[in-house]
Amino acid sequence: MSDLSAAFVRLHARLAPVAFVPEVRLHQADEPIGLWELTEGEFRSSQPPPFWAFAWAGGQALARYVTDHPEVVAGRRVLDLASGSGLVAIAAARAGAAAVRAAEVDERAVAAVALNAEANGVRVDAALGDVLDGDAGDAEVVLAGDVFYSEAMARRMLRFLLRAARSGARVLVGDPGRAFLPRERFRELAGYDVPVPEALESVRVKHTTVWELDPAPPGAAR
Image 1 (cartoon, rainbow, N blue to C red):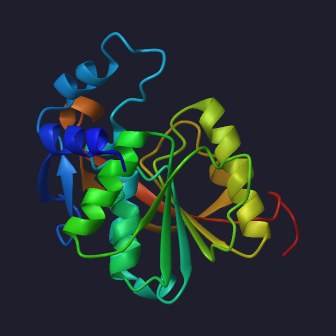
Image 2 (image 1 turned 60 degrees about the vertical axis):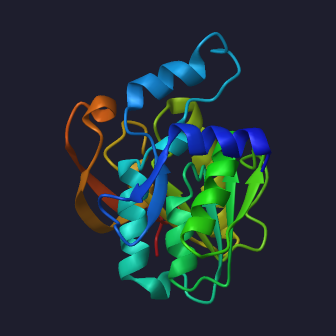
C-alpha cells in the first residue's frame, strides 16, 4: 500500500458502517459523483473508476450471506476477486476464514482494502494485479461481488471462476441483476433487497441474489 494511495482514501472517504452489513465499517464516499469525476479527470484512459469507495449491491449481499452463514468460509482459504473496498474479504475474515486474499487492479483499492481490514481488526492480504488469466491458487472458496457489469469482464470472469470450480473451489457470486450474468451456470442461494446509492444505481434498493457456480455445462447429466 503506497502512502499516497492511503492518504487519498482517507481524504476522500469516511469510515462508516455498511448499510446492509453494519457489522463491517468501510471508508466510503459521501458524494459519489464528485469523487467519480475527480478520479477520472484528465486521466480517463488510465485511472480506474473509484469502485473501492462504495459498497456495491453484489458485495453487500455476498458479505451478508457470508456473515450469516460463516460455515461457508470458516477454516478455509478464501479469494475475493475484484475486491474493491474489501467488504466481502473482510466479512470472510470476520467469519473465521483461515486466510483471505483480495485481488484488485487498482492501487487505491488495495490501499482501501488494507485500511478497511485494519479498521475491522482482521487480516486480509490485498494483492495488486490482474489474476483472471491465471488460476485461484490454493483458494478453497472464491467470492466475487458485482463482477458481471460488462460483456468483456463477464467472459473473462466466467472462465476464471469455472477453472476455480473445476479445481475444487466453491464459487459464490453476488449479483444485482446485471445484464451479463450467465444465470444458466449458477444456482440461487439467497436473495436480498439491498440499499444502494441512488446517484450510482438510479434506485435506492436493488434486489440482489447470491449464486453458486455449477462447473458442469448447462444440461449436463448430474
